[in-house]
Image (cartoon, rainbow, N blue to C red; front, side, top):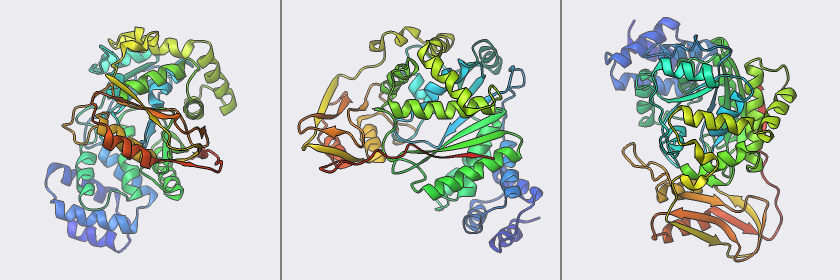
Length: 434
């Protein structure tokens, strides 16, 4: 077996066998196969695609390239959730305690963020004292006790994926759907859950800008998961404008707390109910989505969801009193209201541009070495379809710097106000079930 013949085989549209895929992944991870040959194979995959069998074999080869998490000692069907990212995507902070409040165990492994804002771990670390450095034994014990715990991503989870992604990043093959799907699913499989619900974003603030691409990615990941005996479902949701109102780490934690108390933004609450319902059904907690939604809706109103969140924070060293006093979260020195320059209806909010503005404030990382300012960010006052008077606040900038001219200009370019009323974008496009 040699790389030349495998590149040639995939170039000509033939399927690689399980043994051939394992040869490539293990050889590249170990340093036995050079970048230039794997680059050629990635480009062949980009143009020729992969069969369902190839996808599941590639995913498992990456899973076996490093550590896996054994969750077998956790009682019940473990369910995980993954979002393909976006702006103001606070869903994990809400879904973890919400699903746990319904008795479904959620053992979450999350990472830090590159880009607009921090990842789930960064956001949670806005809570004073909260930590994610748990042993596997402590992690399992907390999930059995509280039905929820979150730890940081292990450094040796899917090392093949990390190496392949770095190569894809410099060879124009990042956007290959088979490679995206296997990359995401290898990490989910390695994390050990029995069922997986995927939130695949589409729109200006999403990785997949077009609905057709988001649909293809969702279907591909659902097929991989189900072929590997993980009950996998997907929801395709909108990210043309930010989700909810808050963009920024501590600001998103505050919004998550409001949502868990039943007082969150309508779009964020709705998406969490849709995703959470899928998670309860995937975990066999209920037979129907309607029954699952009713349980979750009740728990947002009766205090169970926020109570679980409070316990979750306290169990991982966090100051749980932030639930009752958000002033204990990091707070920016300046809150600057940005007024609308005209009256009319908000017709467009370009999510990725607002995300860039938040990153310029310090809410996200431009490089892995960048330090995040947990306090800064943006809080929208208007969403698409809302009427705004001239001089009324479009959003509030939370900043620790007075140098805001470039950021204000960026924001004004990102929010359009027109005379004619427009309808808000559709939030949920499709539910995909294998």
